[in-house]
Image 1: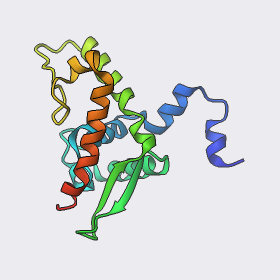
Image 2: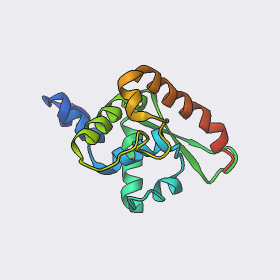
Image 3: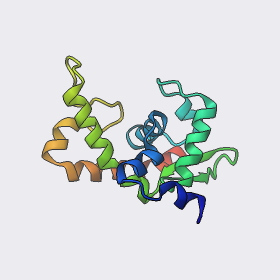
Length: 153
């Protein structure tokens, strides 16, 4: 039996998900890719949460190994790599939206505006309730538009 199968043998679905992306840093990396358009190692380091280089490298490797991210060489700067979501990673967008909605409901911050994450589509909270599928489609479309712009870095 492979090590991977041994680790997941008999686990519930929640445990499986937590093993893959259930730590703070993995979720911040996913947030930054999905909502902020970040694609480069250095861009992840500039997040206000101040992830350390060793943790960032570890989480990127894990997310790539688990099939949530792919890493491709930047054709304009061969010393850089671009990290992007795979289809498996894109399937986490509704999960992150649910987490945002839950957090807004229970984290009593005064005056939360409808665009609570910089880089997220306008009226995020309203659209979660009125046009969830359209919102997800817009997020995916925005992510697919950015690669050509980001390759110019």
